[in-house]
Image (cartoon, rainbow, N blue to C red):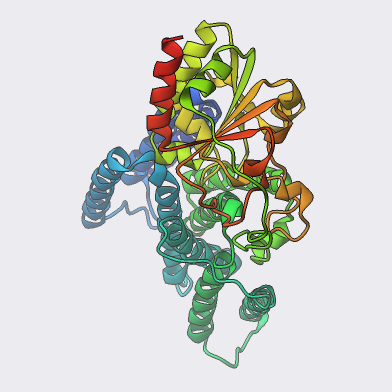
Length: 470
């Protein structure tokens, strides 16, 4: 009778994990579109809640014992504290700080998975040493790499570049692989397993720091995406250690989504995945920065408003400056006004615009910009010669012709939005400061370019008023 009860409980638990997996898949599907992303989060959260509740109630160990009451109380208390803290952070964090928050969350996930592996390696009931070591390595790299990314995005850590870095990183990768193989195959290791384990832990943490330190500029979103995939894979490894299907599936979904996104962004940036892993790419140099490029020409608000009002086709190219100025809502108002007056308005979205993948999509969705108006780089570029006005708002690197024209530039080879192909170009900037990649932009000196200096939100608001008065 008792045995049947345990069996029924396990069956229900396994079924709940299956339902949770379905909820995860539905959630991911809904997350793929801005208009359904909020519902996608709720569906995925419901799946996770179901998995947690059924595990706490129905899980039994090999002896048939359920989770001790003390452990259950601790787990619920920790989840409650995490939920409250996470909710407060999510409500208070500004849109400009979202990339930092994502990096911090990646770090916590990777760190937790690494600690699970560190604790369980010596557990005699653990029969998966390879999975445990992989969880330790990947989780540690995700933790330290994400913390460095957080510091760099927050402006607290500067790029640290050296031609020797890629060789140092390759050496550390070789050491990590060598120690892992030695621990798995050596029957009587010369060095105590605990020493090797902590050496591997330390080496992985240092590698995470070293491979992110040289990376900067427009390459940061690619690294954030890669670290996100690492966190998911590490979580899946922790799931294998505990033989928990919900953790395995959740980790695999996150890891797979992050990996696919990383590969797509590598392709968009014309980078190889290997160059990302060894930290051998990244902007931040000043290769073409100091040479004379020409004369800057400004445009008045009244002239800009007339030009926009009588155009047929306008393309807005948003960047981090739009987010920093919190100008997405007034930008959307300008879009609506021009559309009402018969102007076709679209938004050109570069894959790495902003500081994280999809940053601009989220920003514009917050301002209720219709998703069909957001056009990816590859689709909008052929249409740029037919565009009357390209408005660049706080975007530097993603429109910089140096990516095409200057082999010495750190961003050379990166596909860009061909704003210079438009008939007229208006650039909104606070001043002539360089972008995140810290390199000069010859587009600002182009014959067709006119600069509109000032805070993006304030400038757009004044431009809106001017057009209304026409």
